[in-house]
Length: 368
Image (cartoon, rainbow, N blue to C red):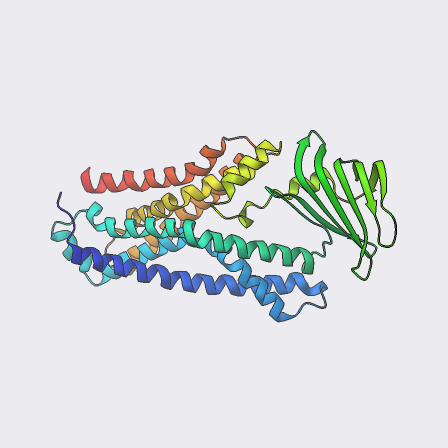
């Protein structure tokens, strides 16, 4: 089988890439509009929240949401390219010249794979950073949460405010032991309602259990007073183990490149890394899924006639299959989170199934 001519490959690739980014721009604009309206609805109770702040939150959330639409953008772009070439009778000329389906699909598939890899390598780190900022603003401005918690390779960082008293807790190392969080090298800073330092605690070890930090070997320091040593000290807190576990529930706020090291840290610290492992596998499968959606679009519309009626039915059918695959992937993702399916199987099955369906039909039409 001869290679497709470079001029034809560039022509097909240019049509696909232009359609892809044009459709992406339209969908991103619609997503931004709907997200802004939804945030305005949610922020009705936050009287001090201005429209500029709400719009900023929508923009911060936009890259993450746009990433979820990429499979549909790839499918729609391929549908539009096939429709345009068919309506202009260019596809008939291309096929009559002896160009096979695989030669015809090679430029769009290669471009789709490249776009998927660029999304992982370049866009995802920026999208995760912006989504993390959005989550923090959402918690603080709309949800009104006064407690923030972060656990990573730098240890535990906690900030909570109760009755005008702010508390910042840092532990160099953490380890989960059943329903208890073991801490080492603990530093606690308390501020008054004027945000001035009122108290500092330094402990060699401690644990979070029963709604309190139980500290051992504590130096208690306050401005204008001599330091006091306590063998043991109990400090009440609103943080529970459920709160700690929930702090791991947002892998979307982490870059694709950061997740593997975070998984190792979580497992070494005794925490479950299943959500992050499943999300990382699904991100790895995303370029394949994009290519699979291009194959699905080609399977439905590559042999369509120039009549608009036939194209409407095939286009609706292709979109219907795309939505079914999306709900199928969400269902498998939920099974993966519940440990009913292995994470690798739950993440990769939608992409593999979609690509096999598209390839099977195209093989049947072209070579069968």
